[in-house]
Amino acid sequence: MDWINLIALVATVVCLVGAIWFSNKAQQQLKANEQKMQSLEVVTKNLLQSHRVVEKQLQEIHQANASLVGELERQSEQVEQAFLRTSQIQSQDPDSKLYTRAVKLVELGADLDEVMRECELPKAEAELLLSLRNKMKGQVS
Image (tube, rainbow, N blue to C red; front, side):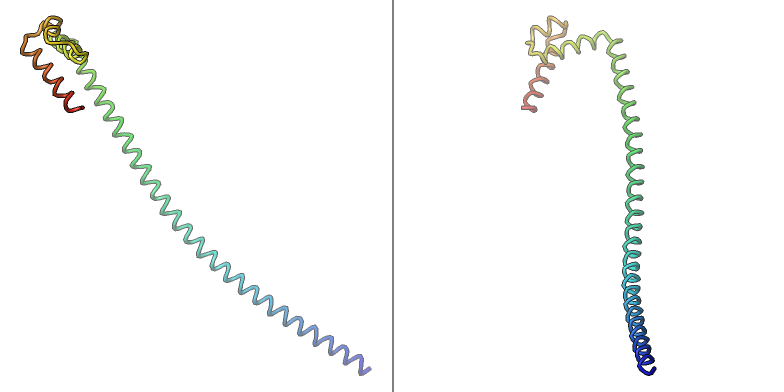
Protein backbone atom coordinates (compact mmCIF):
# COMPACT_ATOMS: atom_id res chain seq x y z
CA MET A 1 0.00 0.00 0.00
CA ASP A 2 2.84 2.34 0.48
CA TRP A 3 3.50 2.34 -3.22
CA ILE A 4 -0.07 3.21 -3.97
CA ASN A 5 0.02 6.08 -1.51
CA LEU A 6 3.30 7.26 -2.99
CA ILE A 7 1.92 7.09 -6.53
CA ALA A 8 -1.22 8.91 -5.38
CA LEU A 9 0.91 11.53 -3.65
CA VAL A 10 3.10 12.00 -6.73
CA ALA A 11 0.02 12.20 -8.93
CA THR A 12 -1.50 14.77 -6.58
CA VAL A 13 1.70 16.82 -6.54
CA VAL A 14 1.92 16.65 -10.34
CA CYS A 15 -1.70 17.73 -10.62
CA LEU A 16 -1.13 20.50 -8.10
CA VAL A 17 1.98 21.74 -9.92
CA GLY A 18 0.07 21.57 -13.21
CA ALA A 19 -2.83 23.48 -11.71
CA ILE A 20 -0.46 26.15 -10.34
CA TRP A 21 1.33 26.39 -13.69
CA PHE A 22 -2.00 26.73 -15.58
CA SER A 23 -3.16 29.25 -13.00
CA ASN A 24 0.00 31.33 -13.52
CA LYS A 25 -0.41 31.11 -17.29
CA ALA A 26 -4.04 32.16 -16.99
CA GLN A 27 -3.08 35.11 -14.78
CA GLN A 28 -0.37 36.17 -17.26
CA GLN A 29 -2.88 35.94 -20.08
CA LEU A 30 -5.40 37.89 -18.01
CA LYS A 31 -2.86 40.66 -17.36
CA ALA A 32 -1.94 40.77 -21.04
CA ASN A 33 -5.62 40.98 -21.97
CA GLU A 34 -6.17 43.75 -19.39
CA GLN A 35 -3.26 45.71 -20.87
CA LYS A 36 -4.67 45.24 -24.35
CA MET A 37 -8.08 46.34 -23.09
CA GLN A 38 -6.60 49.47 -21.51
CA SER A 39 -4.74 50.21 -24.72
CA LEU A 40 -7.95 49.77 -26.72
CA GLU A 41 -9.79 52.06 -24.30
CA VAL A 42 -7.16 54.77 -24.84
CA VAL A 43 -7.41 54.35 -28.60
CA THR A 44 -11.21 54.45 -28.39
CA LYS A 45 -11.12 57.64 -26.28
CA ASN A 46 -8.75 59.25 -28.78
CA LEU A 47 -10.95 58.22 -31.68
CA LEU A 48 -14.04 59.59 -29.94
CA GLN A 49 -12.27 62.86 -29.26
CA SER A 50 -11.12 63.06 -32.89
CA HIS A 51 -14.67 62.24 -34.00
CA ARG A 52 -16.04 65.09 -31.88
CA VAL A 53 -13.50 67.52 -33.34
CA VAL A 54 -14.28 66.45 -36.91
CA GLU A 55 -18.02 66.58 -36.21
CA LYS A 56 -17.66 70.12 -34.86
CA GLN A 57 -15.63 71.14 -37.91
CA LEU A 58 -18.27 69.64 -40.19
CA GLN A 59 -20.97 71.59 -38.37
CA GLU A 60 -18.97 74.79 -38.80
CA ILE A 61 -18.47 74.05 -42.49
CA HIS A 62 -22.17 73.30 -42.86
CA GLN A 63 -23.08 76.59 -41.18
CA ALA A 64 -20.59 78.52 -43.33
CA ASN A 65 -21.93 76.77 -46.42
CA ALA A 66 -25.52 77.64 -45.50
CA SER A 67 -24.45 81.23 -44.91
CA LEU A 68 -22.70 81.36 -48.29
CA VAL A 69 -25.72 79.87 -50.04
CA GLY A 70 -27.92 82.51 -48.43
CA GLU A 71 -25.51 85.26 -49.47
CA LEU A 72 -25.35 83.92 -53.03
CA GLU A 73 -29.13 83.81 -53.22
CA ARG A 74 -29.33 87.39 -51.93
CA GLN A 75 -26.73 88.59 -54.42
CA SER A 76 -28.41 86.69 -57.23
CA GLU A 77 -31.66 88.46 -56.42
CA GLN A 78 -29.87 91.81 -56.39
CA VAL A 79 -28.27 91.11 -59.77
CA GLU A 80 -31.61 90.03 -61.19
CA GLN A 81 -33.27 93.19 -59.85
CA ALA A 82 -30.48 95.36 -61.26
CA PHE A 83 -30.80 93.62 -64.62
CA LEU A 84 -34.56 94.19 -64.63
CA ARG A 85 -34.12 97.87 -63.72
CA THR A 86 -31.49 98.28 -66.43
CA SER A 87 -33.78 96.63 -68.96
CA GLN A 88 -36.66 98.87 -67.90
CA ILE A 89 -34.52 102.00 -68.15
CA GLN A 90 -33.20 101.00 -71.55
CA SER A 91 -36.68 100.26 -72.84
CA GLN A 92 -37.99 103.60 -71.56
CA ASP A 93 -35.17 105.83 -72.85
CA PRO A 94 -35.11 106.06 -76.66
CA ASP A 95 -31.66 107.68 -76.57
CA SER A 96 -30.21 104.71 -74.70
CA LYS A 97 -31.39 102.46 -77.55
CA LEU A 98 -29.36 104.57 -79.95
CA TYR A 99 -26.30 104.45 -77.69
CA THR A 100 -26.68 100.71 -77.18
CA ARG A 101 -26.85 100.25 -80.93
CA ALA A 102 -23.89 102.60 -81.42
CA VAL A 103 -21.80 100.59 -78.94
CA LYS A 104 -22.70 97.38 -80.78
CA LEU A 105 -21.75 98.92 -84.11
CA VAL A 106 -18.42 100.11 -82.68
CA GLU A 107 -17.77 96.63 -81.24
CA LEU A 108 -18.44 95.18 -84.70
CA GLY A 109 -15.84 97.54 -86.18
CA ALA A 110 -18.01 100.27 -87.71
CA ASP A 111 -16.23 103.50 -88.68
CA LEU A 112 -17.06 107.03 -87.56
CA ASP A 113 -19.35 107.92 -90.47
CA GLU A 114 -21.34 104.69 -90.18
CA VAL A 115 -21.92 105.17 -86.44
CA MET A 116 -23.00 108.80 -86.98
CA ARG A 117 -25.33 107.89 -89.85
CA GLU A 118 -26.94 104.75 -88.33
CA CYS A 119 -27.42 106.10 -84.80
CA GLU A 120 -27.90 109.78 -85.57
CA LEU A 121 -25.15 110.72 -83.14
CA PRO A 122 -23.13 113.92 -83.26
CA LYS A 123 -19.53 113.56 -84.46
CA ALA A 124 -18.09 114.22 -80.97
CA GLU A 125 -20.13 111.41 -79.38
CA ALA A 126 -19.28 108.94 -82.14
CA GLU A 127 -15.59 109.85 -81.82
CA LEU A 128 -15.82 109.32 -78.07
CA LEU A 129 -17.26 105.82 -78.55
CA LEU A 130 -14.55 104.92 -81.07
CA SER A 131 -11.85 106.35 -78.80
CA LEU A 132 -13.13 104.29 -75.87
CA ARG A 133 -13.16 101.15 -78.00
CA ASN A 134 -9.56 101.76 -79.11
CA LYS A 135 -8.43 102.35 -75.52
CA MET A 136 -10.16 99.17 -74.35
CA LYS A 137 -8.59 97.19 -77.19
CA GLY A 138 -5.19 98.54 -76.19
CA GLN A 139 -5.69 97.46 -72.57
CA VAL A 140 -6.95 93.98 -73.48
CA SER A 141 -4.16 93.23 -75.96
